[in-house]
Amino acid sequence: MKILKDIVAGFLEIGEKNFLHRDLKLANIFMSNGSAKIADFGFAKKNRHIPEREKYNVGSPLYMSPEALKRNIYSIKNDIWSIGVMIYELLHGETPWECRTEKELIEKMVRIPVRFRESLNISSLMKAFIKKCLEVDEKKRMSLEDLKRWVVDPKSLEAEEVSERVTLPPVFTLLNTLLILTHCYPTL
Image (cartoon, rainbow, N blue to C red; front, side):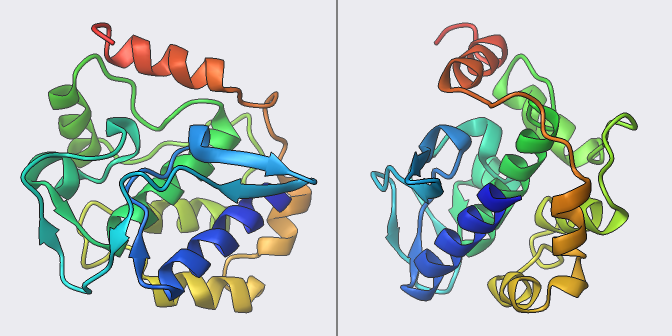
């Protein structure tokens, strides 16, 4: 799945340059000459390698990690959480948790493990990859080094096999993203 590889490669480049994006979501992925490109660096900041507490939340709640939503804490692990949400959304056509409020979203993130539709042919290793990105315990969540290993050694998550076995839903558009956001946040 080329889009997945492009997103991960772009994220690794951001991480290597010591930046946090802080607003990774499908609406900030653009296609250029057949390649997916990460855009909108309006909330990006230099990574100081220690989780930082902000005075206010930045980013899009459906893609934010529990520690960012609950405590305004930001680190590279928040962007990795966002990658997990984006990959899940690419495979399912929706984000992992349905919600009506931010409070409900946080409760579901910490209480309800990620579930995968049986009708989708997703390998157990791809499921493990997504679950590792969406690990609630930040210390157990995939690290930048884990992500690099996965790119260098596709066998670690059967990346090549997954790209042949996964059937994607119809192209996910900005309109679909807006519909999901307005479903979860009716006041938008």
